[in-house]
Image (cartoon, rainbow, N blue to C red):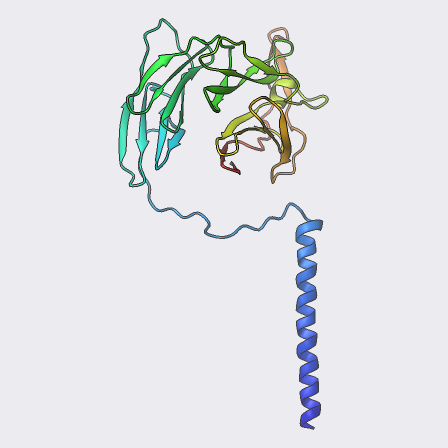
Length: 281
């Protein structure tokens, strides 16, 4: 009797273990193959260790150098803040080389101990060291651009508008050299029946450890990882499922300008690159 009871209990235990194992394997198959939009995130991977009140909402991340981050200021582009791990702040003022430029969109980029002050509407680029914040003007012939990121050895990746159809186009140039900028024609792809300007919109980033720049499309779930010379290493997709931009465009002023006819579906609003990691908001 006791032996029979033990056998029954053993059989029930084995059956229960087998059932749990089967359910686990089925759930893994559903997670990985049949429902790819579901993602599992490790809890508490990032925890807040402190905070600081900036008092103004005009600051933006300009870069970092070791244990310090640097903030530029949209409202006062020649002034900024550096913040250490102890959350102590140091205000700084950039002193640019004298010029008669009429700036419209000065932006600060910090890469290690070097900084760059850029305005693609002029166009111009100042550079200097964060030890003094004195900025020297580059005499390199520059194209007009709306955004640019420093790469290596004085190089820059920039984004501009095509003179043919107004769509966005990427290119590179090297500060301090007289060479003409190089355009990466055809690198940014648009889709059929999708406006070329808004359909190719996105954000630039650069990974110094990889030596690659990244372009993340704003209205679709795609990004490019490329070498500074414009050769594509690979194309990837973000967690979102929107592969085609959900945008409507209207022409104004006799079709010489375009604007959104309805609020667009933004897929990748803000991005950042650190090493081999891509962060998307």
